[in-house]
Structures are given as C-alpha cells and as structure tokens.
Length: 123
Image (cartoon, rainbow, N blue to C red; front, side):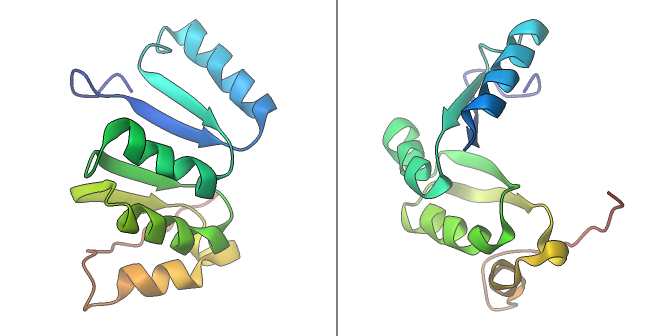
C-alpha cells in the first residue's frame, strides 16, 4: 500500500469480521490505515460497491484468494460492471490446487482478452 500512486486506495474484502478486525489493528500499528479500506461481506455483495464508490474502469489490480470456485463468478461481475481498468492486473491464488477450473478456462482462452502467466510456488 505504500507504493500506491497519490490519491489511490487499497480496498480489501474480508468475509470474516474477526479477521477484518485483526487486519485493521495491524494497519493501525503500521501507520497504513489511511491508505486501506477493509470491506466486510461476501464478494458477490461487496464488489458492486467498487463501481458505485469509485466508478467505471477504476480498479487497476485484483487479487483473488477465496474459494477458487468463486473466481470466475467474481471476474464476470467485475467485467459486467466495468470495474477493471484497461490493462488491470488480475491475480489469483490456488488456481491449481484446490483449483479454479472455470476461472482458468476463461483467462487462458487464447481468444480472450487476458494475457495469462501461471507461476508455481511452494506453500
């Protein structure tokens, strides 16, 4: 969050209020709370707020780290609401194990609009 361009915000979505409270405490202690918003709720209910609060094509990067079976639905919602900026970075964890096959099918389609790179790492 320290590398954000001036005037930018980092928004994270957390379904668990307990985890959100811990994250807010860590941000306060690190002095970064003024740069980060933690929104609580399920992604399908919270993603539309990105559009209403920040407008179309306002999101430059997305990181998915929830159930992989939701990734494709959330990506479709981001696209349908025109939230992603042109050239936005879409990053997703755990796409192989436990897996996100529908998401991978969408972003790896050579006829699609995504340039995809898979990176393996040890947990």
